[in-house]
Length: 166
Image (cartoon, rainbow, N blue to C red; front, side, top):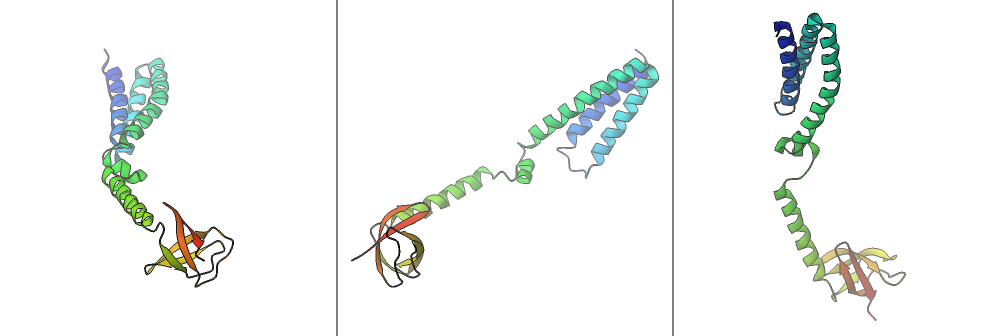
């Protein structure tokens, strides 16, 4: 084989590898610039060897570069750095959030059947106070004034429903 052909193909292959490496090695774009230089040099070598090889290399790069970019993003997304950049929480953060939500739901469920006092107008949503803690509540009737006594009749994760105590 001719050395110019080998240099051209080798430089194109190196350009693709460098482009893939850009995703995993922080270089502020330096590796991408080096990849572009290798691709241009490889195409020049192929065109100097034979214009047919040059056009085949050009078309090959037009198809290979998007494929390498897609593969790089797909692989990068699963790395620790990639997940942080995208904003995907780690397993520990997911477990911590689930534990906090479970604790919140358990404390809210303890409000069931407790009595409290209306703090702000319930039209039908407002604030109530139970055992010194304020909670946002939804009144089953249309309107209750501050100072009215209420009982919690239903609780779920994001809503406390109350009914006036007569």
